[in-house]
Length: 299
Image 1 (tube, rainbow, N blue to C red):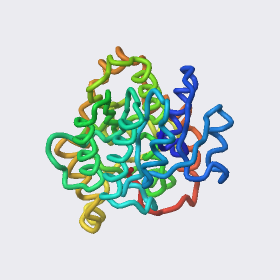
Image 2: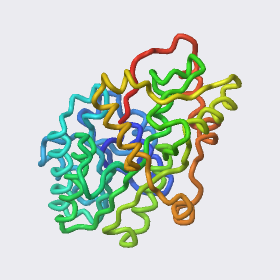
Image 3: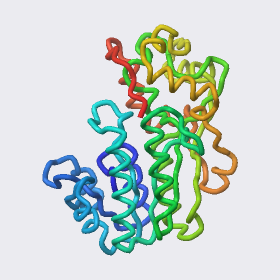
Image 4: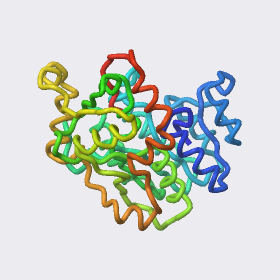
């Protein structure tokens, strides 16, 4: 699997181990310490590089499946361009096919669809998805909504009793906890051919900005107000402005069928449940006085 040392990949690794799978995680340097938590959970660490097809084929040898997620230009500090993300995604798919892997599960994004979005780190995923349709192995595409974890990053204003994000106060947007992405990915691998060739849009909750503020008020024990990112911020940040437009036109707001997902995969974490459970440490950090005022990283 890819991305095991990241939030999403780590959630998939944990879910696969809980489901009884043997898991092998590709890491650049198994001795660096970044994979220690994975190793402690029984995950085998193997050296490899997304830019080295031979190392990918070696890592995938005799594997049943591959979970594919790549670093993205939308991640602050990733140092990855859109073209590199595409190249990495295609290399993983081709190496999995060459190695005889039975099933590849690719993590994309909910804004991806039949038409380009104009946002590089979404359109790169669209190009990878289109390539997956040409490889001669079973593939499943997961399109998760915005992560609940994003709402706890510095720059959203929670330390000041405020919350600023992309949707309008009265408009809904879908979110998902990364642990639920891991749980669905494990279920897809367990399901074999049942999910082959399918694209699944994933979300665990749908909230307006005002609804988000009400839940945060309860969770923090102090009033929290919501406002959309101010116009001056959007005007001065082309990426945030493009993301806000995608929320307004519905593509980034999400269209996952929450009832179907729960019937298919069991209960998903609602935002309030996530804040009371796995999100509690992040909530405490985000609410702390003097938290960083930097801008949020959205992917």
